[in-house]
Length: 81
Picture 1 (cartoon, rainbow, N blue to C red):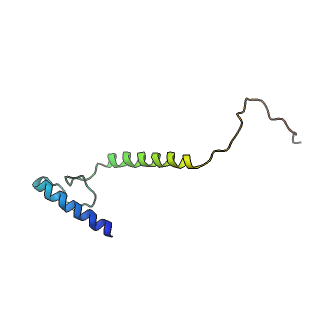
Picture 2: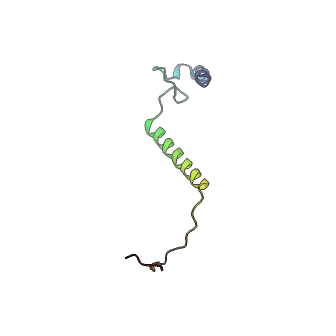
Picture 3: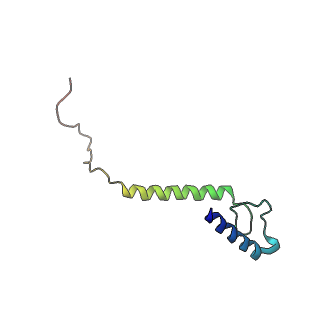
């Protein structure tokens, strides 16, 4: 809850800086600095970029199995009957 209180304080400061040009008439929690709602497409693109960045970071943490490249030849060994 403290984070939301801090965020509200920051919003009130930004509202004061923008004055009459501030556009948050709907009392939204997360807005642009001028109070306008975030563009949904921009939020989506930022979300997708964050997920991709996290996936790349996670992939670096997972050790890869050491395998020999397959040159197209069948594996040698016992045949199953």
